Length: 490
Ligand code: NAD
Image (cartoon, rainbow, N blue to C red; front, side, top):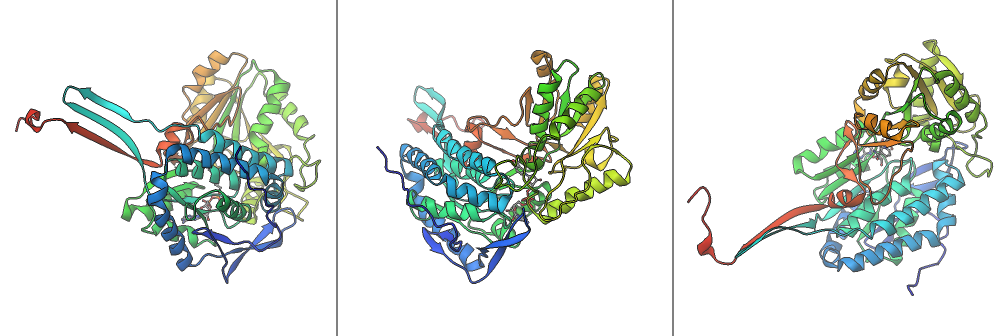
């Protein structure tokens, strides 16, 4: 029976980075704000250039041993990481709610899902492919770890999105320097400390800092790969940043996912599904449904049911057990969402629900539904990443498919219908990395997901996601050089 560390971390202590297995403090700090009341409640370390160099060096020192640690041992350590998260789920969830704003229930689900993700990812096996095994010759392709990985994470799911990266990177034999968003660094820093009870020193380093730290990491010559989740605008900068050194790159970027609702759906059921596909985490999900195309035959009924259901959902402080959706996580995102609501108001679009906020104690935005705005409106064209949802009426499915595909983004999409086969045929014509029928955001550690167009490069999760943290090597062995015929008949 494995022993699981159960020493409870002290969550009101100062927050520190973990570099080479050592708890590392800084002189300078960045303030961390509770989005439910806009108050600074903690300070996180502001990593110096020397400390970044130390973290990369520690990961580089750990790499040669970690990369040849037996695969089964790395699998077992991922499982122990999962157990460690579970052993500390209460304190970690409370901290996540305080810094991110999501409800305590959702924070607990996030930590629990991160543990599940580690455990399931550990079951993946990296294959070796035998290309040729004829008399006197064999060719084998295998997948080698890359080295030190920079993992850069946004603020909407700070823990789960970090675990997407570190689970695959570590299992494949890489070492990691993980940087959470400056807006939500605390839970990740605590997890960095906790994981030192499980992992060898230097295998997982966690640093935090202000806006300058990400670009410094991108440019740092010690990283073999940058694995980034965040906005498309930052993704472009990162691609430029890594170009001089030709680093490996995974980019999981923004989305503007379309949902198509066919006339044969059960309205009450599907309205509830659409609501949660769009408004979960207060709309701050890359794969949330962000524009809903509804057939004209049911448009009014679906809109009214969505409004009715949304009116029953309580928005409030994450620690209140009655709350179902929390505030927007930060001021910049709040301003962006408000700007989109203002644009709808100023252009005279119809509000089926919500509007400008009146509670300004925290970054709270009323659940807002815009009734059939024009196709070229900002709320349809842009990624809102907040609780403001445009509903668009369609008559002809060909037109709905065309509109759904008319976006620079192509992350996810959904189709809702009583006829799953017909919906699957529509799904196959939608331009997106993940398309779901009668379900949404059905992510799994065993299923890869990827963004097309401006939504990303590469993928995460599943075997394909695991292999993103490896470089392919083919070894050809000929028993006797005398049988080699050379190139082009030489
Ligand atoms: P962001 O791009 O502002 O920041 C993400 C991370 O990158 C943060 O850690 C930030 O400090 C860092 N960063 C900022 N500038 C950098 C630079 N020049 N070089 C290196 N790092 C830099 O994104 P955000 O506002 O934190 O997150 C919201 C965005 O993330 C949305 O667009 C959302 O769709 C996207 N997102 C995508 C996925 C996905 O899997 N495709 C998942 C979640 C969120």
